[in-house]
Length: 265
Ligand code: PEP
Ligand code: MN
Image 1 (cartoon, rainbow, N blue to C red):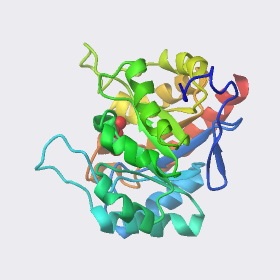
Image 2: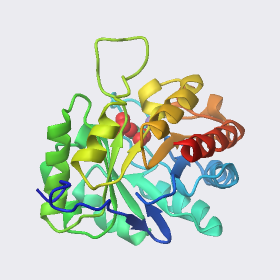
Image 3: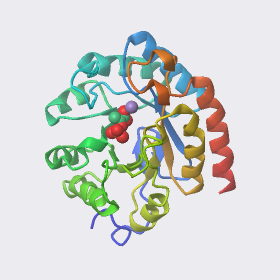
Image 4: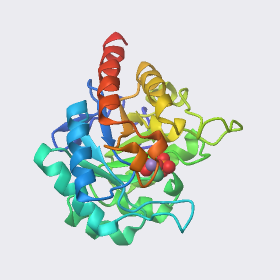
């Protein structure tokens, strides 16, 4: 299997422009759940940069549970995201839900394509991003086993794109107290089974801002190569996932702790 350690014994470093993911350094991807307005994105980008993040995230096409919820700013959102990141030289990460939007993503210079949880087994979508060389963050499916997740990565790799980053974001469990159960065990397991970089999204796991620091530090201690954290200049006003968003100040405090744990482990 192309994603397995057997095939490629050394850790794969996925380069996103000048930023290595899966190398010695921990990378933090931060930004709001949804791209909302130009002002919001400019503040989000400045806040993420100052807080120590190296990539900017923001969803322009949103996979919402209800069709009546905000669905994303779509093309305009891609533009706000790119415009906000450019002055800081930050690469951008955004979710692709439909292969028909690939040309738009390339037009706005999306640096990393996120395949969301709900599309982990959208095989046509996986094959399409496999035909690009753009790095892909493949999020774990809602209740996907690690084997299913790795086979989804294989769909991308088999088309020729090995620039794949796996993102653990918590799985459905019997426990309703928090949004999803972060599978910390998946981190060392994946680091052993595959050469692909592994990052953790503590925001969609915990579902609450107060839980994000603990989950982030656990992920780094367990060997994750990076974190993807939701951060909003004004969480209370966020159009989606505000309850789990950190403020830029909170993110800054967290990235310092992350660096300390990374140093110690
Ligand atoms: C997101 O990153 O905003 C998102 C929708 O995540 P997930 O696919 O993990 O639910
Ligand atoms: Mn979100």
